[in-house]
Length: 317
Image (cartoon, rainbow, N blue to C red; front, side, top):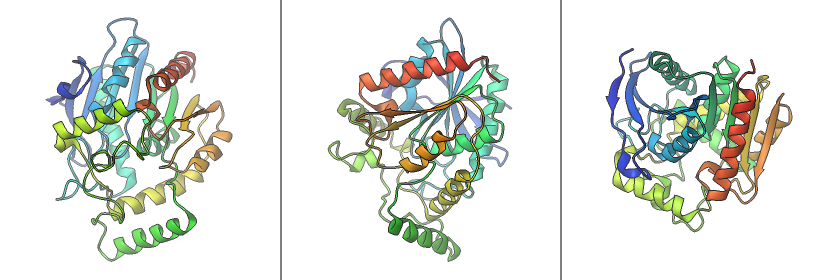
């Protein structure tokens, strides 16, 4: 694998991060982007950071910098179809994937890069939202991590029973009729934070963090993403249903769930964590969907808990 330098937008981070980004190629010849941040000293291992749908590497710069102060290198990814990775449709504003399992090809390329760069071991997983669904399958299938942590994982999508039936009918029926590349109803082509005011948003209770997200996308519109395609919706519903039928791996795990979660299916998260060997569910009181983008007090609580998980679990397995 040849690692070619890729852009890393320091102008939208809190301060120059010292991170480096690279282009890597998947087994199906898509170009995706990864970024690395390393601690200056006291190296404890590497965190594989899996963002959610619509997200991009720079959004997690502050998280990666905080992990570096605690001794952990970070390898973050732009999934296919978002960030600066190759987009899947002519209209790149629509989030799309052919098969949900294709994201595992992105992980395979990411892990080849981790080995080539010789990132410090052990590896740990930190996965948010859609990244939580991708990451859960990866861990089930042997991703070489010593611990895993999830933030608002998309192990189900929050819908009423009527919405679920309608969504499934539309997603499965629409794709069979050849409309799989069309945007899902009740979503738009612009990124959520550019169309939703802070008041009433479902991501964070921190106005400064929300403004930061808006400023990042205003400065670099090419990293933004709008709503998902019908095919993505069909694949996501199928994948989350399949994952719900599988047992959790026996690996130390902490999952964070905001008490005001409104995007993913909270019950699916409770159900899984109740049966996860060596697993703990942490309810973040007052938190919305993105606890890593919450108020400073919440972020510190989450990062302290992550450090405990990674340090206690680093010799497990």
